[in-house]
Length: 321
Image (cartoon, rainbow, N blue to C red; front, side, top):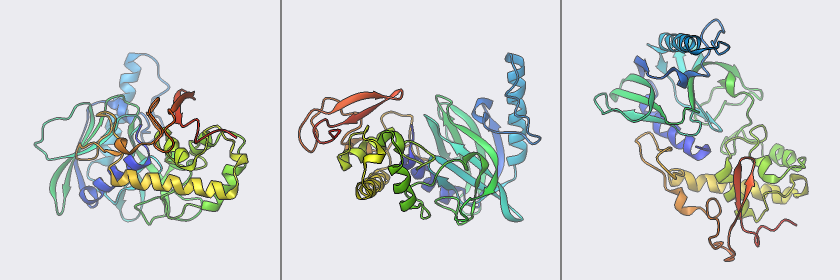
């Protein structure tokens, strides 16, 4: 699943191409990609039963999405955690945005108008940019866990900018429940340390709690814990303030390196806006290395089930004390 570095790579790739671009055409190839889009009037049609009613609900969402987005001008893309949005400009401060969540396999692909079709394209936008001319933005998603939606923008609780890439103290209503991420200039280190140390749950579970810190997923949690020599089941309440601060620093280090290397790609499900895979998978010390020697001490890396996923750690370097 794309985590913060992967979504940030996409945001950076989109920024120069879509900022200031006008949407001149839209084609919704699969309305299921709009499952989180709520048409004006508040009826998303999701309560209906039967094939016919679901098809009608999908058509309604698609028609509303196309009508409201056609002719809109995009502002600069912004991101908080794994949520990505592009404000829709108008008179004064924007009140709506195109909200994207990549889910497990979502891709935002920039293409020339005449480029051949990508696989699993669910929504297609034709853009006109004042400098770059005609572009095509394809939202592809093999597994359909991702989504696009037009969402209203609400004010941030702390009055700071909504996320990375924007100076506006606004963010989509569907993302207001998630915490800031460690790359956000307004991230509160002290609040994170205090919140982590109040938790009796395992430190990895705490890192994955998007209400405490956003953007950290399975891969980068394992990597940061390996660098911190922490067992994933160590209770947050057992960590000192110094160790908690050290863990946060390692989260940022892992994110920074992953951004340099374009994110982590194990298959074709995550690519950047040009369709290229990241190569941070070659720099992993913990995730996916079951049975391989620890890069620090040589002990065979261990894998244990964790909430429907897995944790990877070194049983020697990361002993639970």
